[in-house]
Amino acid sequence: MTKEKSKVQEYVEAIVIAILIAFFIRTFVVQAFKIPSGSMKPTLLVGDHILVNKFIYGVKMPYLRNTILPFRDPKRGDIIVFIYPEDRSKDFIKRVVGVPGDTLEIRDKRIFLNGLPFNDGHGVYTDPLIIPGALQPRDNFGPITVPRESLFVMGDNRDESYDSRFWGFVEKKDVMGKAMIIYWSWNREAFGVRWERLGKILR
Image (cartoon, rainbow, N blue to C red; front, side):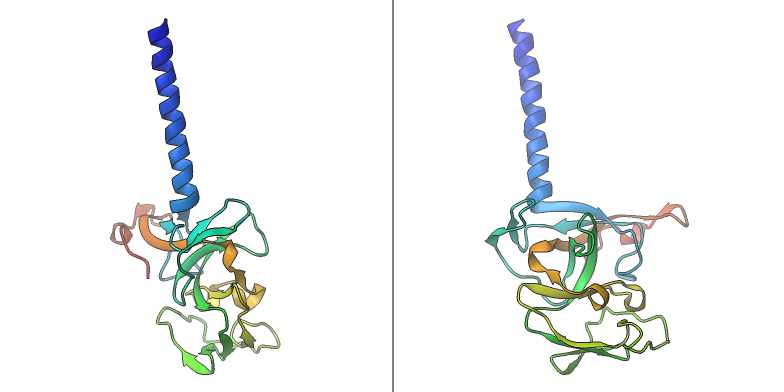
């Protein structure tokens, strides 16, 4: 009877330890996310499954979002996952375009950063229509200066992205991590795996 109890106890301990390790990894090291929209096309497609490095910007306390071990700040060009400011139950993924202190302006879809034309090489424009800034900020916006501890983010699919142009800045404390790699990609329209995308490093 004692041997049976010890066996059961061993199994329970092993399961508890495995759960704790999985929780630790998911909370502090790496987490999987699925891409639900086309706002980051062509970099990320609907159905892409990605791994996000949660360690690169520092260790954050769960729920409190305080960084207790900072490593480096998000850089211009990083693809980040963050808590959506307008609905904190949702996670968004966009590319960092402006960092603290940057002055950013958009004129007829052209981005100007600190007074100079900016081309990150990732932005794609599919709609030839130019919308006046008086109607909406998609194509004409700013100038604005990114506050301390904040970021300005945009989707790579610039004409189809709901981002900082519309709802404002992302606070650094709400950044969950940096997108690293596509580990799975499912094309639901063609009902098949996008094999060529598996293992793609995100830049």
